[in-house]
Amino acid sequence: MSTNIDKGEREKGNGKSLLSAYPFSHFPFPLKKPELLAPAGNFEKLQAALIYGADAVYFGGKNFSLRAFGDNFTREEILKAVEFTHGLGKKIYAATNIFAHNTDISALADYLKFLSRAGVDAVLISDLGVLSLAKELTDSKIHVSTQANVTNWQAAKFFHELGAERIVLARELTCAEISEIKSHCAAELEIFVHGAMCISYSGRCWLSKFLTGRDANSGACTHSCRWKYNLVEEKRAGEFFPVGEDERGSYVMNSKDLCLLPYLDKVIQSGVASLKIEGRMKSVNYVAGVVKVYREAIDSYFDNPNDFKIRDEWLDELNKIAHRPYTTGFFMSDGKPTEIYETSKPSRAADFLGIVRGFDLSTMTATIEQRGKFEVGQSVEFLQPHGKTFSQKIISMRDADGTEIFSAPHAQQIVKIPVVEPVEIWTLMRS
Image (tube, rainbow, N blue to C red):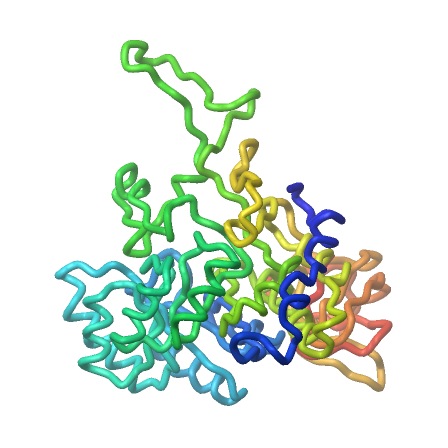
């Protein structure tokens, strides 16, 4: 598959194989609108995810989640995040999905009790010892992480009997396998539908620790799979042979990014309760754009499931966001390669320039909090939480004091610009 989602993928995504087998109201299990679950790498990303349409967010604290190098949340920030999320009537889950060692247990017990007191809606766990602690010490709902590697219905039933309300299934499953697990297990099921993939089985990797001493299973992955490698024969020390076909080398463990939007109908019809977006270390632009696309697509399906179509503007938006070439992973089991052999770098995204913090309808003026340099005469695009995306040129600018300026080079500078259409608060300005 090319970097962009091509026409063939769009057409295949509009198939109705399951719909033809089961009329919308006669599926073998109740078909409910699934939750859209988004990553929250910090408080601003949490706000963006919820405002752009996520039903729930997941975050990590300063310890015990699998994104040790992300911003993550202090305890004070967790309390603030729970209050903001619940104020919108939405849910928030805490990732505590490391594989714990003996030295982690005491601090983990204290942290789990804090999360319960803070009011998080569930804790995300992969380690059976941590699950036991959560059951013993808290009233928290338990979601089993994809790291637990649930690939069959018997394992799903086992975790459900241990007290797990939801199972985040392993990524190595086809659509048919997911549906079969659903038919045998009463637990809620969650799957990843978009974002970066890991070359290792269900994310269980020792490569980073072996090469750098940083343990991926404790949240400190150095993404060694994205590095460029050469082959060395033991009797030819110093001679390096590229594992590839050209001078750029080869990235044999460098996976593509997951995108199941073209098959969203089949995802929904599999009966899963939650559609998860990867990306706690991604940008606000990524979170807002991906969440808006999947929100609109899910709602569109349930508005008219029998005539659901993937819209070009959704796919175009996903192609504007920094990503590696897209793949459907294991979901469609189509035999297409899921690795990239040319480069480990993602495509260049649209430049994120600022966030709309205010709008004056009487003067058609937007107040922008600057995030990237922009200037008079530049063409920009506005991605709104709910309204349509539109483009225009910046014809003039003023700073917070009302002084006319011609560029905005300073980080988080407040700038006022005329806009050709009304804009919502939290609209992103891009180029």
